[in-house]
Structure formats: C-alpha cells, structure tokens
Image (cartoon, rainbow, N blue to C red; front, side):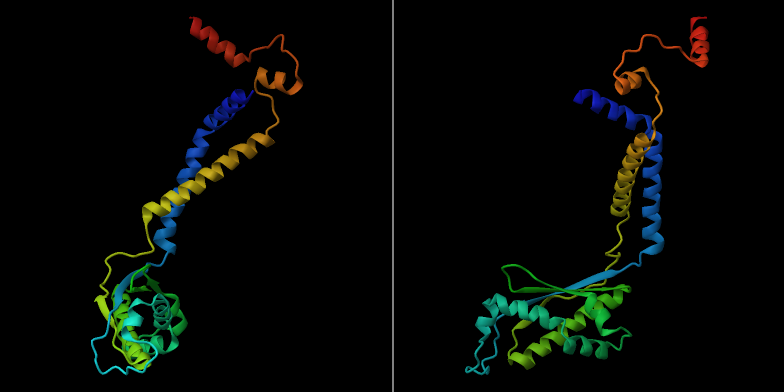
Length: 235
C-alpha cells in the first residue's frame, strides 16, 4: 500500500511538472529582480588589531593591570571589543572624518569579532560607499588605539591589517539569492499541487472508483476521442 501511495504521489507531481517548472522559474526571476532593484549594495572593509606586549618601560608598575596581563587576558579582549563601538570612539570618528552619518546608524554597521583563543580583534565596517567603509574602519582603529592609551595608560594595541577598499558588495550574491527563491518556488509548487489535488473531487480513472467505493469495476466505456485514436492507429 505504501508503494502504491508513493507511486501515486510521484505520478501526481509528474502530471503537474509543467506547472511546477513555471512556478520555480517565476520565483527565480523574482529573486534576481529583487537583488537588482530592491537590495542596496553594501560594501565591507575590515581591519585587524592585535593585543601585543607594550615596550614602554615607563608604564606605571603600580597599575592593577600590566601589559603582559592584558595580552593574555581574554576578558580584556572582550572589553576592547565593546570599547570599539562605544559612543566616545564613534563620535570622534564621525567628527574626524566629517561624514554625514548618525551615530546609531554607524554602530549598526560596525561589527567587532574577537577571534577565539587569540589576541586578535577584527573590526568590520559596512557602508554604501566602498571607500567610506575602508576609511571609517581605519579611523575607528586609530581612535580606538588612542582611547586605550588614555584609559589604560599603555600602548599594547597594534594594527595588523589596514582596511582596504572592497571591489564587490558584501550583501549581494545573485546565485545564492536565485537558489533561495527557487527553493521557495519548489515549496510553493508542492503546496499548490497537494492543495489542488485535495480540492479536486472528480473521478478520473477506474482505480479511483475502486479506491473510493471499495467496489470492483466490471465495465468501462471508453470516450469517443479514445475510440477515434484507436481506429486511426489500426489503419
């Protein structure tokens, strides 16, 4: 019985293959149009910082946190990650660059990633202009380093990689978007086939009668079109 049900299900989808293909194509086209017309390109640039031991011998030895402790303390890495997106840092970056952007907007487009089991901090900035994304990321790094000197009185943060201008948007991937929308189209087409089959109560085959009423069919009368085709085939 399970094999028969699976076979019927396969036959159902196969009979609707044209509709399924059309629906999937429509959704794929919608996905492509969406990424072209309705998605604002955003460019990402990142700079990498490292917590390194300070070489300054004039550091106050009475401070509760030494340069060596800062280098190996993962909690301080997390603190630095939050400091990068603080009001003082972002406001100074906006002021230094003279850019027309709200502080909250800039904060939403700045992400900080402290790489696991390392003293590396990656600052990523997203912006509609590729040049601005790189410029802002580098300025954040510079301002952040100065803030660390002011707060902790140490110079233990160094730039490993400066931010570079990106050539392509980071939020647009035509292939990925088309695949996602095509998958949605597949799901919609499956739902369409199943629902239309549930709503269709007409009897199409002898097997439908036997299955519905649990009675054997003794005689079936072929349609006129079928007789005409059969006679033509005999000739």
